[in-house]
Amino acid sequence: MNAPLPYDPQRLAHCAGEIIVNVRELSALGWTPATSSNFSRRMDDQHVAITVSGRDKGRLTEADIMVVDLDGAPVATSQKSSAETLLHTQLYKRFPDIGCVLHTHSKVQTVASRLYAGPGHVHLEGYELLKAFSGNTTHEISVELPVLPNSQDMHTLAAQVDCLLDRQAMWGYLIDGHGLYAWGRDMPEARRHLEAFEFLLGCELELRRLQR
Ligand SMILES: CSC[C@@H](O)[C@@H](O)C(=O)COP(=O)(O)O
Ligand SMILES: [Zn+2]
View 1 (cartoon, helix red, strand yellow):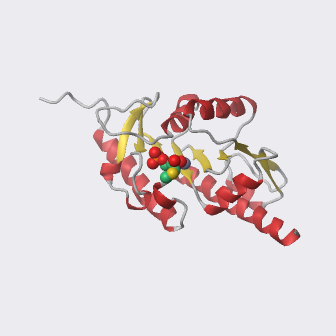
View 2 (view 1 turned 180 degrees about the horizontal axis):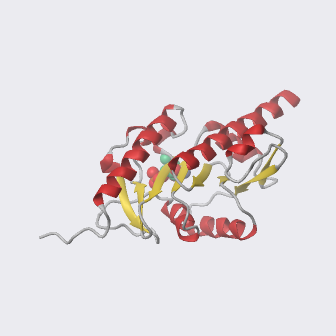
C-alpha cells in the first residue's frame, strides 16, 4: 500500500488549477517564451506547488505541477522542479504571508534588465500605477526595482536577493538579461504586482526612446 501523502491533494489540485489558468493568460501575452519562466503557489506552511522544469508554460496541465518543501526538495515525486526553485522557496521561507511567486521573461522585462543593470535598479516615480503595489496609497512615492547580475548558481542569486531583502521591502526584482520575479500574498496580488512592473517598465523604455 502507498504511504499517505504528507500534503492535502485537494489543496494541490486547487493551487495547480490557479497556476494553470493564470499562466496560460500570461503566456498568451508572450511573457513565457521557449519554455522559460516558472510559477509557484504556497499550499500550506511546509509545501509549495511549483512548475516542473522545462515544460511549455503556455500548455501546463496538472501533470506539470509538483510539490516541493520549503528547502526546495521534491515531495512524494521523482519529477524535477524548476531550475530556479530556490528563488521561490527562499521567499516562502522568509515571509510566512507570501503565497505566490511568479517569474516571467517578457521582452520588456528582459530589455529593461539590460539597460538598468549598470545602475542596479530601475527608479519608478510619479506613476498612478505605483498604487498597484500593496502598501502604496499615492503616486507621490518612488519605488526602486532592483536589477541583479544573472547566475546559473541559484545559491549565488538567492544570497543576493537575501541581501536586498535585509535592506528594503520589495515586491519584485529583475535579473540582468533574464527576467522578472514578482510575488504577493495570493495569486491575484502577485499577478497585479507582475502586471504593474511590466507596465511601468514599458513606460520607462518608451520614455527613453522618445527622449533620445
Ligand atoms: C528556457 S531558458 C529559461 C530557463 O533557464 C529559466 O530561466 C526559466 O525561467 C525556466 O526554467 P525551468 O527550469 O523550466 O523553471
Ligand atoms: Zn528564468
